[in-house]
Every structure is written in C-alpha cells, then in structure tokens.
Image (cartoon, rainbow, N blue to C red; front, side):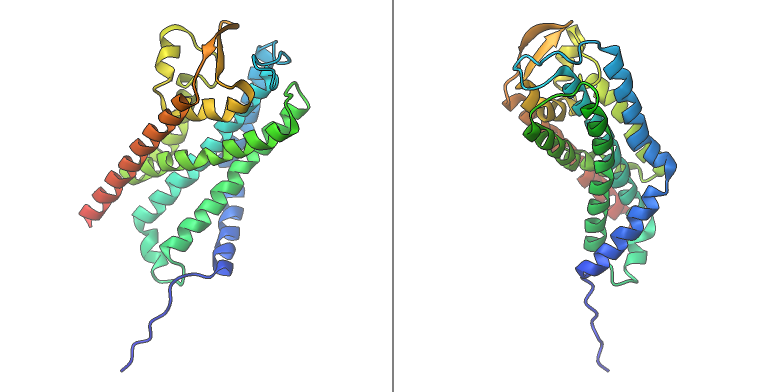
Length: 267
C-alpha cells in the first residue's frame, strides 16, 4: 500500500486567507485596539499639551519638538501592538495550537508569516493615527522625514516582537503577555521616551531596552542632541543606540531560546 505524502507548505493564497481572518478577529477586539491606538493617541494629546514648547525647533533644526513627541508616542503604540501579538502567538503555539495546525495544510512557518503580516498591519494603526493628529498640531519636519521616521518606528517592532515572544515562551499565559505589554509603559519612562529625565535616571536610561530604539527613531530629528531641563546638555554618538539595540536583541533571542528549550524539555 502506497502512502501519499501531502505537501504541508501553504501557498500564498492560503496564508493571505488566514491573515485576513486573524486580522478581522484582532480588529474586533476593542480592548486590544484601545491600548494599541486610543491610549497612545490620548497620551500624545496629554504630552503635547503639557509641553508648551512643541513648536520650538530641535537643536539641529530638522523639525519641531512636537514632532519628537509625536514619534515617541507612535513608537509606544506600535511596540504595544507587536509585543501583544507576538506574545499571544507564542502562547497559542505552546498551548496546543501547533498540534491543531498539524491537522491542516497550514504549517507553523505559514502561521508565523501570517502573524508577522497581522502584526505589521496592526502596528500601522497607532502610527497613522498619531502622525495624522501630529500633522494638524505642532509636528513639523521635512516630508521625507515623515516617511523615514514612520518606517523606523514600524521596523523597530521586529526587536520588540522578540520581547513579546520571550514572555510568551517563558510564561505561556495571556496574563504574562498582558504584563509584557504593560511593562512597556515603565520601559518607555525609564528609556527617556516619555518625559525628559535628568540626573541618575538619565544616566541609567542608556542601559534600558527602550533607550536604543527611542534614540534611533528620533535620530533624523535630533541627531543625538539632548537637553536637560530645557537646556542643551550634549550629543550621543550613533554607535551608542546601535550597541544598545544589539545587546538587548541578543538578550531577547537568548530568552526565546530558553523558552523554547523549556517547552521542548517538558514534552
């Protein structure tokens, strides 16, 4: 008797069909959209109103302070999206969804590609909402910088998708994924992304996970110049945020590998 081997690699149409289903499912989850879109937009309004110097130019003259605040809030919203979705995907696989996929033509590779597409689309929502709002407020920069900073914000999600995966693989519960998303608020504050820090907190911020991506997405506007209490205080070198990103990416990868190893060992 001949056994027929069914090719499990899904075609592009199958992946797109599943992506559409998963995207619609996520868009119907109001609580998720609230924390991804509404909350970052609300925080942008708060921060842009608190600081009355939003129309002032940055030290290098590439844009306004309002544009810098806008980029930071867009980063917060985008990272919230990818952390939540990546962590949930890891939890789904670890709780048996992988075995369900084994009964269908969809492979784990196709599932991962689909999740990446969904995360990219969802992470676009807060960026679009905040950038459109910023355009009508006090955010000013060259047209090409609007596009460049938006792409950099979305691209930084790749790094923090690993952060979400790490939480999902290590703890394998939706509450852990929620904790990972919630911890982003603390990381943004400690990374000098929400409010300008000074003293010890500012010195400490350069070692936090957010600091590198926060500096990098703002680099076209600031070129590393920073202030303390509204006064010019110095300039970072480009290698500093790049090194921060490299180190923390490695930490997240190691965390994911430990999570996978623990899951495999329990089997």
